Length: 373
Image (cartoon, rainbow, N blue to C red; front, side):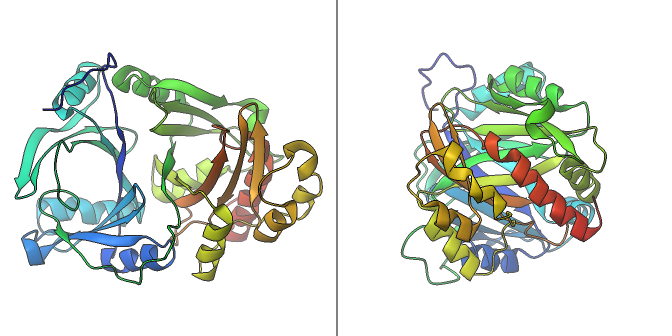
């Protein structure tokens, strides 16, 4: 067991993995390899003794995605996974967090009111031992608590190394998971903010209410909780009353309840990343040219010329600590649910407050095209 020297009752080391339940993991792995430039590094399935499901592990820097699909729905595990995909479509089922002591983290979480899903258990192979536990959060999302210790394997015991599906890119598309955003029902945002404060000792990092996130037609409210090191950041959104259906309402309807709305991926070169992903077929939200007409007046100088931002439809924002550049994909599956954000930070630890109106108007245009506004 790793010794804990922090006074934090729930210390974390960072995001361990974003785990997706998908209809076809093999094809999804190929998509994230070709379109997102991730590298397949590990696999678990019937060929190595796991007969219920197939899982592919892809990485880009410290960002790790695990894509799992059912093979035999007649088993309890397979039935639960198949049901989840049938009800929700492809989506995130687990935001796994690396911790120095999974037993202590689980005990603290349960003592503070978290619903335990899996008690701490050791899993081992020739590369060492990992301790895993899991607690529930909003909807059917879980947090697996991962204590890796000195484990030397490719992912977890039971996984084997896998060859990349495509030729790895010379430069990484992105380096890490910046934050993971959850959508919850009207009136439940504060409940889940309190959950993370009580259970994990997270603190409020930002909050956006009222006119912060509102357009002529729709609105939402958002609060951001994070651990003390800011390695793990979870914005929580809920809908707010508006003239028409908000993006959160649309998500809740098509996902069938609360869940993970989008994953923000940190890149150190958003221009290179966006060009590569566009060339590979990724679709991004469109931003009207008028957004850029006055951008330089309030954002100031950035490392990227405004003309290049305009060309690639990248947003910019500045606060007291610096600036950031960001862009959002369209949903990456047929249901208008999960999408991704690319973010390049230069001092700013914000979330693009100055862009909210332009961003949500862009989302509303997409909702209108789908007939869901």
